[in-house]
Length: 365
Image 1 (spheres, rainbow, N blue to C red):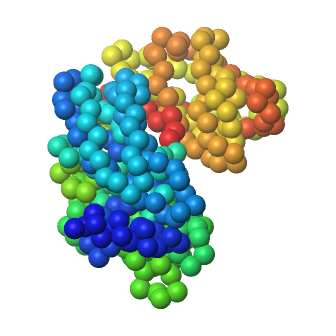
Image 2 (spheres, rainbow, N blue to C red):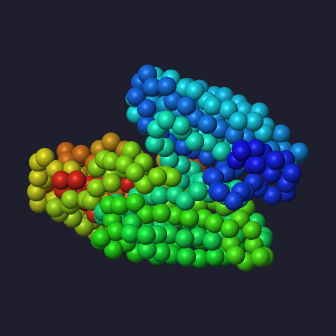
Image 3 (tube, rainbow, N blue to C red):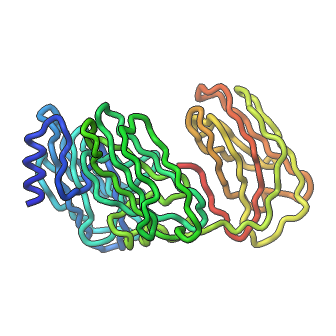
């Protein structure tokens, strides 16, 4: 009955997205759904396609990407039809289903196991008119959380509510969200290591309606939204979600703007190199526009690269390094701006060497 109601609404309303009294999560453009499978598992995904208007003829396409990053199945779904996509896993681990709809809309869910929408800056969730309440996980080390949301079309907006693990309303805002809006919230210690909830609902303002909304979770949050809190456990295990255990921080003096085609050299002293520890380089960078723009070497060793920040954007990265890249005594760190991609300058600063039992690597989104 729900599917019949949705189908009739999609056919009757060409200029607006599908919505219903009992919300489901209706996606637009494309979306990514994550799930775990063991080799040999028979996985079933329920999908449904809705044509937004007669001028949009793009069929829904579902692609399964396995745990080895291989696209192993692709199936199309006719407009205004439902289907069950079946996939027998060939590998074990995290899989992703990519659903593409163009300007049309659709739904997707995994029928026989926990699943989650992927919600990060390069792969945001794009909803259209309706979204079920979602849960996300806040790691124990995060003192502040953030998410970004936009409803860029005029007269479109949303009511956004965020609840902590005890059900307390910690954020509520109704607005048009015409520009990308970052929501920052303090996470007291008692609320960490647990699931929080997010609701995106129709606004009460008669001048606004819930239609196209893009959203993604901020740095440090596992980029998964699940319809059940208990499902998150499938996606948030591992050292990357545990707090750092850093025993020593060595400051590397200097850091500056690096003009086009030039280099800077930073030097510092290491008085000891403890064995059996994790080593990392932490630094802030700005305006790194392509993957090979800023090559780096430690003590003249093998070259690696500062991750991309994006144009005029600042990001702080933590990059694992090997202990044998360092020496007791004076060490050198050389950053070079590679102009081959057309960029003119970058800057690097706040450089540190970290030593500890557990250090989470962060190379960006």
